Structures are given as structure tokens and as C-alpha cells.
Amino acid sequence: MRSLGLVGVLRGPRSSGTILTVPEHRTPALILRTFDQGESDRLVHLYTEELGRVSAIAKGARRSQRRFPGALEILTVVEARLVDRPRSSLARLEGVKLIRSFEPLVSNLGRYAIACELLEMLDRFTGEREASPDLFRFATGVLEVVGEDRPDRLLGLLVLAKTLARLGYRPGLVRCTACGRALGAGGEQVGFAPRHGGAVCRSCRSPEDVRVSGRVLAALESGLRQPLRQRGRLGLGSADVLLAETLLDRFVRFHLGAQVRTCAFLRTILSAESLDGGRAPGNTAAGPDERRPGAAKGGATRAGAPPRGS
Ligand SMILES: [Zn+2]
Image (cartoon, rainbow, N blue to C red; front, side):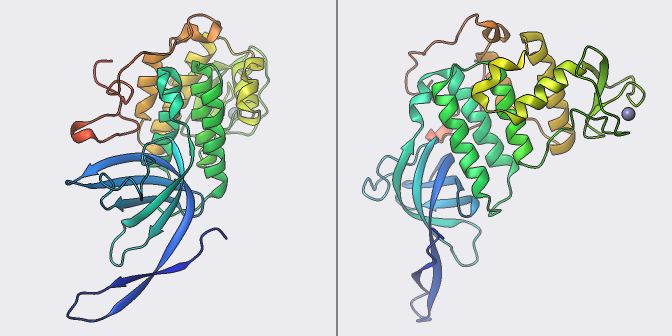
């Protein structure tokens, strides 16, 4: 166990003279979102390897370069020292050590948008303190690919689909989710019904269900099973990706009751044509403010909050 269970000491109110012992955790953590708090503190959302998602307050973070050596930025992986606070769901972030920064991908808006899609999903759709080391490793693996591959809509789509599956929301794609009949991988138009959990055969589909071919569903299924880097072999063209985005948006809205906000941002940054080897989004020469689409009032960075009017 990397979570050492060390004992930190918290002194109670002076008059009480009590000493409370609270566990300290050391765990690798991906920084999802940060907000300035007051004059010198920072509120940080982390996805940790050992504890799952944790919200923590970093006291004096904006002043102490020693305890937080430039590592409290989104898209960095740190070793975090966290201390639970009695009677508070907010942990105290005592210090961090930089393990790895994915920050270079910020300089490419397309990559940044896809990375923010992942951060937003981890931040909004995982349970506080629901540990999943697998999900942590998945997330850092995805960021590695996003940092190296050409960003395109298909990559954004598959990051969305794979992350959903990891969170327990995997659409059924190869069998009718209503009657169980196997769906072909050909051109037959079947349906997609989030209320059933995914694809539905011709007999089970309703007029309001989006029509989609078995071929697109089978390719998506392969995309879920194969590494992201092999997505070029799936045979999904730009029209297929646009359709699949619609299916997943409906699926997310039905099952999570929300939309992944970053998806809209991502789709304004990455044109559908970027799929077909067309315009690749180049590096932007954006200044510091623009490099943080989430920059909000007070200097807070918010993953998943695209700039207005961009
Ligand atoms: Zn059916």
C-alpha cells in the first residue's frame, strides 16, 4: 500500500488540550481542477490512485513554492500528501512532489480540449473517495496518448466512450439491448435507445430512436476494445463520428442526467474534417490566458468550462 497511513497530529483548541491523530495519505494524484481561495489558499480537486477523487485545501499554496513547487496546475501528476480533517469532507493538502506534467499538451488547443473532457468526467462523474487505481492508470494512459497523437474528433469520441465504460456506463452495441438478438455488422439500419442501454434491433426500435447501421456500432465496439492509437483502423469516417457523437450525447444525458460540457468546446476546436486527414489543429500561439480556457474570475482554473464565445 502506498497510502502509508502515517499519523499526522492536529492540536485541538488550546483550551481543550486534546490531541487528535488523523491519518496522512501519500498517493499519486492527477490534478483535475483548482480554484483560488481567499488571499493565499487553493482549493484542489484531485483524482488519486489510492483514494479516488478527493477535494482538498492547500493552505498557503499561492505563497509556498517549497511545499507546492509549481505543481498545482491541472494536468500534472503529483505525489500528494493529504491529511483528513475531522468533521470536514475537505482534506488538507500538505504538500506535493511533481511526478509528471502533461502541461505541454496545453499548447495545442485540440489536445487540451480532449484532455479537459477526461478531467471533467473524472471531476463530475466519479464518487468522492471511491478508490479505483485502474481508473487512475487509465486516465494517465489516455493523457499520454492525447499528448502524443494528432488530436481529432474520433480521439475525442473514443476518450468519451472509454471513460464512460470505465465509469460503469457502457452502451450495449453488438446485441439488441431490448431482446438480446445479435445485430449484424453490416449496413442494416437498427436503432439506438439509451433507455434500454444501447442498440436495439429493427423490431424493438421506436420511431424516436436514432437510426444507425450495425457497421458503425460494430466499429465503435472495436474502438472500445482496442487501444486508442489503433483508432485509424476502425473505418469510421467523419459522418460516422458525428452520428456516434449524437448517440453518446443522448446516452450520457439519459444515464448521467447531464452533458459533458467540454464536448461542445472540443467540437468547436476540432472540425469534423480533421478526421479525414484534413485540417489538423495547429499549435496555437495563445497567451497564458487563452491557454487556460477554464480561466475564470479570480484566476481559478476550471477544467470543463470552455471560454465563452470561442
Ligand atoms: Zn430487439
